[in-house]
Image (cartoon, rainbow, N blue to C red; front, side):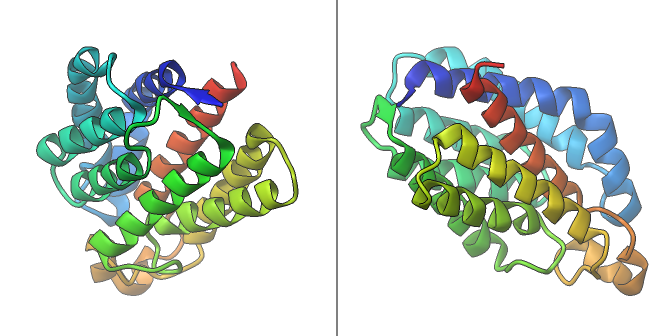
Length: 210
Protein backbone atom coordinates (compact mmCIF):
# COMPACT_ATOMS: atom_id res chain seq x y z
CA UNK A 1 0.00 0.00 0.00
CA UNK A 2 1.15 3.52 -0.80
CA UNK A 3 0.62 5.92 2.11
CA UNK A 4 -0.24 9.60 2.24
CA UNK A 5 3.28 10.28 3.55
CA UNK A 6 4.80 8.53 0.53
CA UNK A 7 2.69 10.63 -1.84
CA UNK A 8 3.84 13.81 -0.08
CA UNK A 9 7.44 12.56 -0.35
CA UNK A 10 6.96 11.85 -4.08
CA UNK A 11 5.68 15.39 -4.72
CA UNK A 12 8.59 16.94 -2.77
CA UNK A 13 11.13 14.74 -4.58
CA UNK A 14 9.66 15.65 -7.99
CA UNK A 15 9.94 19.34 -7.09
CA UNK A 16 13.63 18.87 -6.24
CA UNK A 17 14.28 16.89 -9.44
CA UNK A 18 12.60 19.46 -11.67
CA UNK A 19 14.58 22.25 -9.99
CA UNK A 20 17.85 20.38 -10.55
CA UNK A 21 16.99 19.61 -14.20
CA UNK A 22 15.37 22.94 -15.13
CA UNK A 23 18.35 24.19 -17.15
CA UNK A 24 18.54 21.00 -19.21
CA UNK A 25 14.77 20.98 -19.80
CA UNK A 26 14.93 24.62 -20.87
CA UNK A 27 17.83 23.84 -23.19
CA UNK A 28 15.79 21.07 -24.83
CA UNK A 29 12.88 23.48 -25.20
CA UNK A 30 15.17 26.14 -26.67
CA UNK A 31 15.85 23.77 -29.54
CA UNK A 32 12.26 23.00 -30.53
CA UNK A 33 9.89 25.07 -28.38
CA UNK A 34 9.49 28.34 -26.49
CA UNK A 35 12.59 27.78 -24.36
CA UNK A 36 10.71 27.97 -21.07
CA UNK A 37 9.72 24.41 -20.14
CA UNK A 38 12.21 23.91 -17.32
CA UNK A 39 11.87 27.44 -15.95
CA UNK A 40 8.07 27.27 -15.95
CA UNK A 41 7.89 23.81 -14.38
CA UNK A 42 10.41 24.71 -11.69
CA UNK A 43 8.37 27.82 -10.85
CA UNK A 44 5.24 25.70 -10.64
CA UNK A 45 6.74 23.10 -8.33
CA UNK A 46 8.25 25.84 -6.15
CA UNK A 47 4.70 27.08 -5.70
CA UNK A 48 3.56 23.50 -5.01
CA UNK A 49 6.17 23.20 -2.24
CA UNK A 50 4.86 26.41 -0.67
CA UNK A 51 1.34 24.95 -0.75
CA UNK A 52 2.29 21.44 0.43
CA UNK A 53 2.30 22.17 4.20
CA UNK A 54 -1.43 22.99 3.95
CA UNK A 55 -2.12 19.57 2.39
CA UNK A 56 -0.30 17.30 4.86
CA UNK A 57 -3.48 16.40 6.77
CA UNK A 58 -5.53 15.79 3.62
CA UNK A 59 -6.32 12.53 1.83
CA UNK A 60 -4.32 11.47 -1.25
CA UNK A 61 -6.98 12.68 -3.66
CA UNK A 62 -6.99 16.15 -2.11
CA UNK A 63 -3.18 16.30 -2.15
CA UNK A 64 -3.00 15.44 -5.85
CA UNK A 65 -5.79 17.86 -6.73
CA UNK A 66 -4.03 20.58 -4.72
CA UNK A 67 -0.81 19.96 -6.65
CA UNK A 68 -2.69 20.07 -9.95
CA UNK A 69 -4.52 23.28 -9.10
CA UNK A 70 -1.25 24.93 -8.13
CA UNK A 71 0.44 23.89 -11.38
CA UNK A 72 -2.43 25.16 -13.52
CA UNK A 73 -2.37 28.54 -11.79
CA UNK A 74 1.41 29.09 -11.75
CA UNK A 75 2.99 27.34 -14.76
CA UNK A 76 2.95 29.23 -18.04
CA UNK A 77 2.81 27.68 -21.51
CA UNK A 78 1.19 24.36 -22.30
CA UNK A 79 2.83 22.32 -19.55
CA UNK A 80 0.89 23.95 -16.69
CA UNK A 81 -2.59 22.98 -17.91
CA UNK A 82 -1.32 19.55 -19.05
CA UNK A 83 0.48 18.53 -15.86
CA UNK A 84 -2.12 20.28 -13.73
CA UNK A 85 -4.91 18.32 -15.40
CA UNK A 86 -2.92 15.09 -14.99
CA UNK A 87 -2.58 15.59 -11.22
CA UNK A 88 -6.20 16.68 -10.83
CA UNK A 89 -7.55 13.68 -12.77
CA UNK A 90 -5.37 11.36 -10.67
CA UNK A 91 -6.72 13.11 -7.59
CA UNK A 92 -10.31 12.41 -8.65
CA UNK A 93 -9.55 8.68 -8.77
CA UNK A 94 -7.92 8.79 -5.31
CA UNK A 95 -10.64 10.87 -3.65
CA UNK A 96 -11.02 10.06 0.05
CA UNK A 97 -8.19 7.52 0.08
CA UNK A 98 -5.42 7.56 2.70
CA UNK A 99 -3.74 4.52 1.13
CA UNK A 100 -3.44 3.30 -2.45
CA UNK A 101 -3.37 -0.29 -3.65
CA UNK A 102 -1.33 -1.20 -6.73
CA UNK A 103 -4.57 -1.09 -8.72
CA UNK A 104 -5.39 2.37 -7.33
CA UNK A 105 -1.97 3.62 -8.43
CA UNK A 106 -2.47 2.21 -11.94
CA UNK A 107 -5.94 3.77 -12.12
CA UNK A 108 -4.51 7.13 -11.02
CA UNK A 109 -1.81 7.00 -13.70
CA UNK A 110 -4.38 6.00 -16.31
CA UNK A 111 -6.57 8.96 -15.32
CA UNK A 112 -3.55 11.29 -15.45
CA UNK A 113 -2.58 10.11 -18.95
CA UNK A 114 -6.20 10.40 -20.07
CA UNK A 115 -6.28 13.96 -18.75
CA UNK A 116 -3.19 14.87 -20.78
CA UNK A 117 -4.70 13.31 -23.90
CA UNK A 118 -7.96 15.18 -23.40
CA UNK A 119 -6.41 18.55 -22.56
CA UNK A 120 -3.71 18.39 -25.23
CA UNK A 121 -5.96 16.78 -27.87
CA UNK A 122 -2.95 14.60 -28.64
CA UNK A 123 -2.11 10.93 -29.06
CA UNK A 124 1.05 8.86 -28.83
CA UNK A 125 3.47 9.40 -31.74
CA UNK A 126 3.15 13.20 -32.03
CA UNK A 127 6.38 14.04 -30.14
CA UNK A 128 4.81 15.06 -26.82
CA UNK A 129 4.89 13.92 -23.19
CA UNK A 130 2.47 11.17 -24.21
CA UNK A 131 5.34 9.37 -25.95
CA UNK A 132 6.75 8.74 -22.48
CA UNK A 133 3.49 8.44 -20.54
CA UNK A 134 1.55 6.05 -22.81
CA UNK A 135 4.28 3.37 -23.00
CA UNK A 136 4.82 3.75 -19.24
CA UNK A 137 1.14 3.16 -18.51
CA UNK A 138 1.03 0.10 -20.77
CA UNK A 139 4.14 -1.38 -19.15
CA UNK A 140 2.84 -0.72 -15.63
CA UNK A 141 -0.49 -2.41 -16.31
CA UNK A 142 1.16 -5.33 -18.08
CA UNK A 143 3.57 -5.83 -15.18
CA UNK A 144 0.79 -5.77 -12.58
CA UNK A 145 -1.33 -8.14 -14.70
CA UNK A 146 1.66 -10.51 -14.75
CA UNK A 147 1.74 -10.49 -10.96
CA UNK A 148 4.76 -8.24 -10.50
CA UNK A 149 5.12 -6.00 -7.46
CA UNK A 150 4.32 -2.33 -7.94
CA UNK A 151 7.99 -1.31 -7.86
CA UNK A 152 8.89 -4.01 -10.40
CA UNK A 153 6.04 -2.95 -12.68
CA UNK A 154 6.96 0.71 -12.20
CA UNK A 155 10.56 -0.12 -13.11
CA UNK A 156 9.22 -1.52 -16.39
CA UNK A 157 7.19 1.66 -16.81
CA UNK A 158 10.24 3.89 -16.28
CA UNK A 159 12.22 1.87 -18.82
CA UNK A 160 9.35 2.17 -21.31
CA UNK A 161 9.18 5.93 -20.73
CA UNK A 162 12.96 6.24 -21.27
CA UNK A 163 12.60 4.37 -24.57
CA UNK A 164 9.73 6.73 -25.41
CA UNK A 165 11.96 9.75 -24.85
CA UNK A 166 14.54 8.25 -27.22
CA UNK A 167 11.76 7.59 -29.73
CA UNK A 168 10.82 11.29 -29.77
CA UNK A 169 14.22 12.01 -31.35
CA UNK A 170 13.21 9.94 -34.39
CA UNK A 171 9.85 11.53 -35.19
CA UNK A 172 8.61 14.86 -36.52
CA UNK A 173 6.53 16.94 -34.12
CA UNK A 174 2.91 17.35 -35.16
CA UNK A 175 1.62 19.00 -31.98
CA UNK A 176 2.58 22.13 -30.08
CA UNK A 177 5.21 24.73 -30.81
CA UNK A 178 7.67 22.12 -32.09
CA UNK A 179 5.28 21.25 -34.95
CA UNK A 180 6.12 24.60 -36.59
CA UNK A 181 9.64 23.28 -37.23
CA UNK A 182 8.37 20.25 -39.17
CA UNK A 183 11.41 18.20 -40.36
CA UNK A 184 13.76 20.38 -38.32
CA UNK A 185 12.29 18.88 -35.14
CA UNK A 186 13.91 15.53 -36.06
CA UNK A 187 16.84 14.53 -33.88
CA UNK A 188 15.62 16.47 -30.85
CA UNK A 189 14.11 14.83 -27.78
CA UNK A 190 10.84 16.23 -26.52
CA UNK A 191 11.15 18.28 -23.31
CA UNK A 192 7.68 17.26 -22.06
CA UNK A 193 8.43 13.57 -22.52
CA UNK A 194 11.70 14.15 -20.68
CA UNK A 195 10.08 15.86 -17.68
CA UNK A 196 7.45 13.08 -17.59
CA UNK A 197 10.28 10.54 -17.43
CA UNK A 198 11.88 12.46 -14.54
CA UNK A 199 8.59 12.39 -12.61
CA UNK A 200 8.19 8.64 -13.12
CA UNK A 201 11.82 7.96 -12.17
CA UNK A 202 11.46 10.04 -9.02
CA UNK A 203 8.21 8.30 -8.06
CA UNK A 204 9.93 4.93 -8.40
CA UNK A 205 12.91 6.05 -6.30
CA UNK A 206 10.66 7.21 -3.45
CA UNK A 207 8.43 4.12 -3.51
CA UNK A 208 11.49 1.89 -3.61
CA UNK A 209 12.89 3.76 -0.61
CA UNK A 210 16.01 4.92 -2.48
